[in-house]
Figure 1 (tube, rainbow, N blue to C red):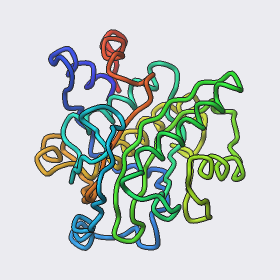
Figure 2 (figure 1 turned 180 degrees about the vertical axis):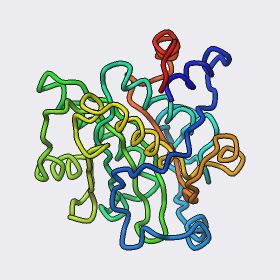
Figure 3 (figure 1 turned 90 degrees about the horizontal axis):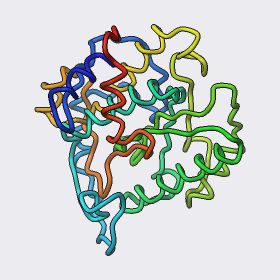
Figure 4 (figure 1 turned 60 degrees about the vertical axis):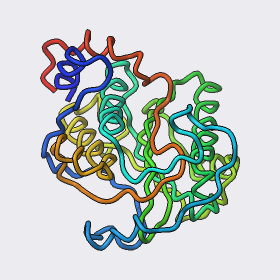
Length: 266
């Protein structure tokens, strides 16, 4: 994946398709409600959910991600940005080692307020890492499911030796404005171990790329064809920012990725 992304960025100024493999390696898939086996067809009514709320003035995440903006699927630059963030994280020594699903609708967060909630949640993580002298990085994507409603998938990095207790995660969700319960949060290590990127790089990248495919499964039809996505599922009607990444994984790192991927085989 790193080599593919590097070649693409040498040919494009900003975004270019990463070509995820069709590796169906098992990933640490977080709980999404009682029915994880929903078919593409059975979940199409998620797109018809009436999630519209009268937007408030102001923006979240920039002018193109204003709080009242409504999208139905990930565009190509969104999906590519998610793959790029995964690769940049590892190259900068911050491999994404946890996969966290937060069902914010079950936590009492309206979809129109979800992007702001996620921002506050990630701010809690950042402050925790900074206070302990560590580094935090994350990429996330919002979806609306037929059974679990509005939720966010977050691939994140904390130092591998850190253990995150249930009470700590509960505190973050409550501090961000949600109401914690057992069904709201599920966090699992990517590759089965927090140090998988170091101890078994091949296994880590198989899982990281499969995770990326899973995170972009709500891409628009044309994007899914372009990227060769195997997993497909409507992401629902989202108000406001649909995906994001921490500043340390932003596009300014594209030259870093290009310059560090020559000869890479991943």
